[in-house]
Image 1: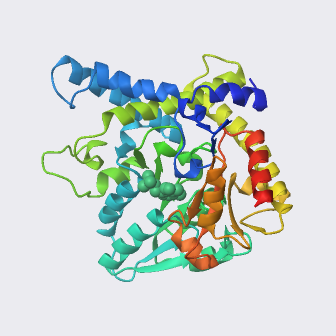
Image 2: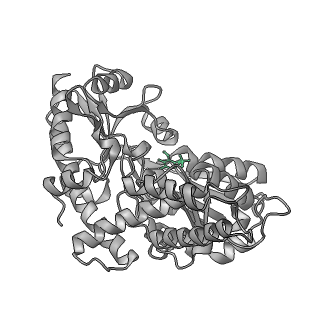
Image 3: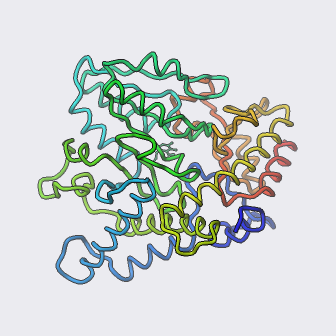
Length: 416
Ligand SMILES: Cc1ncc(COP(=O)(O)O)c(C=O)c1O
């Protein structure tokens, strides 16, 4: 298989939701950054769990034993998805926000007055306020890396200026859910390490578009959410073993003190954990088809999948950006230089000279094009670039979108 219009049309058949009609046309799902659709295999994995081994953990009877074994396999799948060695360093939880609030509460216990916490101005608020609040509780100071407003990239000079020997912790996003900007996280983590700071990466927006690699990124902690990469609504947290073992999470007395249980409070969403493993295997399946190697192992298969996805999405992005550039009333926020597309994902936020974001999104919705409007919780960014309170309209493409859909959107925007 190669990524092209024909193979994407074929691949879309795996997603029941994509069959939805709006009038006589197929609905256009450009809302991926707020949550992607799921392939049939994910739906089946969830039902399979509920039908066959639905039980609480650590019992001595058959369904509980089977459930524990399935869950362990899912932890391993998630570890491979993130490029981590050890499934027990993966904690599932409600969503990225809840996982991050819990982690911030535990990390904040190690901070004190005089410590500096370095955050980024390009973030979703889930990678900002949890740290901010924990820093305030601990009496630590917060510094914020500024952005370059002309292209919504992180200002690297400002980052280096604000990274000092007082910096205890740095939290950055791998990619912006508003402008699609991809950050040079490996270099930033290496610099943070040099001053002895811990690093946390928000990989929520990165996960559907490129291969996460906790080893290669050199981070200490990373979070993402399966519902953004074709899985169900559940969050994933990874951390280095020594850190997850030494930090003290807020937890109940009878809950385990070992990994991963100490970070997974209360009864878990077992069926969605199974759905997550199925989403990872769906992606690995794409990689096997691209490589034409049906027995390729999961991690190399994921690498192949994302190489194909990245290239295909870049083509869509380039078509979208050049089309938008022809429409005089539209401003694109973020990187628009066609030579610079490797620094962005196909998540494109726009504003219109005459229409408010909600009006524009409503017009597109009437045409069967589903896009998000507002700030999508990327409040540190939207405040900085001055688009509050209306925000922007976000066109979010993933690998199941097509050139035909991009052209249809452009024709609708031109008519507006
Ligand atoms: C970049 C980014 N970070 C964090 C979050 C929060 O994730 P969750 O909804 O899993 O809490 C989102 C959700 O939109 C996001 O896009």
